[in-house]
Image (cartoon, rainbow, N blue to C red):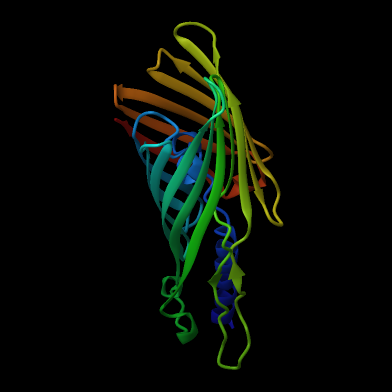
Length: 295
């Protein structure tokens, strides 16, 4: 009886985890790797940008969410921008690895305004390792993996002091987990399918002096059948050498960040998320590191 109860509990956690992965990880420093969320960002800046990130959630039990990611964005020619990203996200017994390529096209609206359109192409592999449950039951041994294509769309408007971003990272909603069925033919885990999601963000840059800039922004994530996730942020830039940011994630958390310029072509950033919702009882916080290079 105890073993069956343990199995049911782990099944519930696995299903919750899989449903949680129907949306992208909640990056803390997404502004520094924008083409992961929006393919239209590829080639927006004149320089080639390469970024690496690591995000880890601290829980009071094992199975915390952990994400590693890398991205590159570069201008090409004839108003074309190119980009690519690699994301590996793990939580409890579930892992998703995705590889995508970005292509963008630039339209010149006026001397200071550019409008970019982008498409994202790639694939993802979703894997569930049932053997990690440590349950002595043949039904929960081995692993299960599924493949899913990814096609994303995005647009990015950039002015002299402002930007607006709108993207759908994946319009192909695939089944990422098939049901588990016991020897009696009973379904004991749910079928899980990816859910539609859309990102929107906007911001403005105020130059208060030769050495101080203030960049307020708003970020929103829309997900089918889920609450709206909205961030309000302010980032202060000091002499192009350091950026300090504060973000309020509505009804969820408070995020502080710092980005330091180590060299003219290299920057290192860190962010910490402090949970303010009822989940603070089990989630101690989230750490994220970002390393960026420019050419």
